[in-house]
Length: 576
Image 1 (spheres, rainbow, N blue to C red):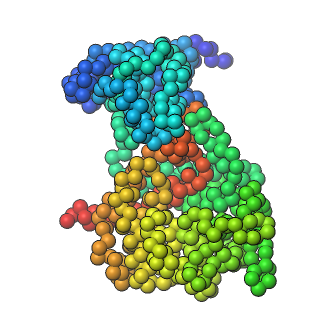
Image 2 (cartoon, one colour):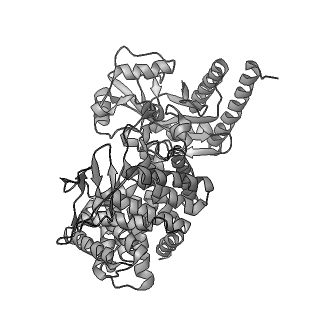
Image 3 (cartoon, rainbow, N blue to C red):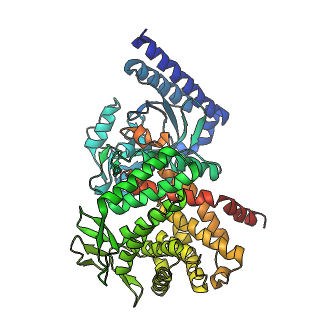
């Protein structure tokens, strides 16, 4: 027998009520509404309290219901009544429910709000806004940024966009902006019917769950979901869905072979942990696409046909970094599955790297025209130098042919000479870690530590999630551990700030969760289920591109596999 609409709505209302009880219980466990009122009275600055109930069915953008009153409890009761009525009228399944109650509020001039917005990165204004004193036109931070209500690129807030959002919420629209608005922060919780997760209420962590202790299991979980997200982007032909902007679910046009290849690398790293057959199948398909569609063979300088370039036909280019990342990925694959299938291909790709290498100064030529192979750009991005050096080290590990290591050493000498630590480049860190497995010369060990150490303060304070910073730190930790464990000569070790180093690793590991697809964050995007469990770049419209997922996943993979030693180092300082 089919379930009637009436029965379904009754089930939805029952589900909503259970979730509201869970959320109310969370406020009660922390002293209840009376304590909340007492604690927040001074910080409310005479403003009314407001409560917000966000309801999401997982498939479509959350609906936000609100209520206001002279106390937190009155606001809560009003918002809950509005939520019940909304579910009753619209038949929305309340799979996810989030609650926000104001605990801090202050009036500012509208011109000040404009200044705050002008000084914010895209999607980085992290407070709620009310356009009236009674909080009848209040919008919470999540819906403001999840619907692009603020026009960040033009550094302004537009009446038409605000009214569009107010209208979508069934609220009274504005004829003009008031002279003053209220900015507010909330105490917030989220539930999917199980536990209630306390959320950060302000600052750059705003809206995501509080993780009391970031550990290896936290890392493993996000590696698992993000790698699943990434593997599901692989089509039948082995090509990834390149990415999209999830606020309005706009697909990112174009394709990038280098990013295709590097994304496979992170899937291989995830496979090392899970041994999942489906993951391996997706990896094989993606490698097959690369091999079948992008490799072209050319004679080397001596006219011998043993050089392969990874071409980018759409842009008519051959990129140094593409060859390098292909070597890195394929050597990782062969090691992970126990095969030498791509050994010859890796060597031929390596020959392509050497064709672009200048032994006189250790530099690389970055970009050639395709298919003519005529010179195009001597320099494109600093990343290519680190990628190429890392790849040369991988080739030495594969073949033990000294020509690869000699070239890598010359490139590393240039890194030192030209102070590459200023670039804060994770690929340089990968290269130095790999190089010093075979050449444990003091200058390389010291530079490897310096590359991280001189950048710790900048990395710690970085306001964006900037995924490659954690990669840089964690791969440098491997180098640091080897120096200490093996007692290697390293003059920089004495000044290396090991405590600051490990503190920064843990801080960045937790902070990067601000780019993770938790339900409480993605529920305000157009299709929440398409972003769930992945990673996004907030300051570029919540961009979800395959290489973004790759870098997040790779960073947490490195954290996970080094966790035991990281904990030991961290604990050694807590005992002092």
